[in-house]
Image (tube, rainbow, N blue to C red):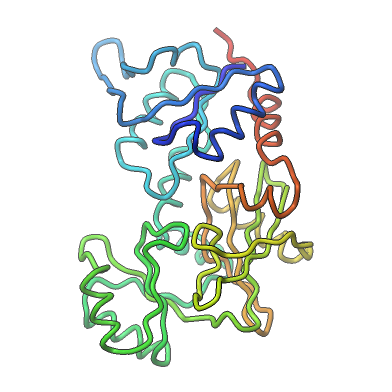
Length: 296
């Protein structure tokens, strides 16, 4: 089986390296393509893609662009599927999950618990949200934040002014959310593959930080997921229409769970280190079993 990966990173990037290692071990080929080095074409022969050598020899394309996936890359996914080549995950699921508010909006509509949130476009809206949340502190997030980046804890009015000035873009909006203190809190990353939970880790914020993300120094450890949280993670994955995803669940000190993010291109370095699981091989096995070689 020949697998193409949409990514702006090379094989020095952990997920790409591990996926290639797992693919080769199982007799498959895996190649990378930067989407922004391709050209989408339209004409009498229909939609096409140029500047991607070997595209039509691929059996499957796996998108690994994450929250910063651009409009061009989403258009490219449509061009590829238009050629009869499957893409994992789907364009629509990636469109939703690249935006934190659209993700929470879809989850909330399905009665899946999410943190109390406001999506604002003005400084006045920011302060209104703070008041409705009961005052400072609050959490501010860019809609395309990822890995703990683009996220700030806002503890007072002067800090709010700084965050508004640096984070707020009127046309993109800004999330303002209730702050759940780290004390007594559980931060969980649940890796879902084909509507099955294949790995879970509990993350602990580094000293002096409220963010538990692995990318900002959070400590990862394996975690036995209770059944009700497994159901919650699978509901979130299904709501987003994702075949592969990471579902981030936070529980407050009263152990009330909230889904705070669904990632369509989750990293798994921390999960593999914390659990000893071979996540890369599980992904490759799923792709081979689910799709196999594409009819030519």
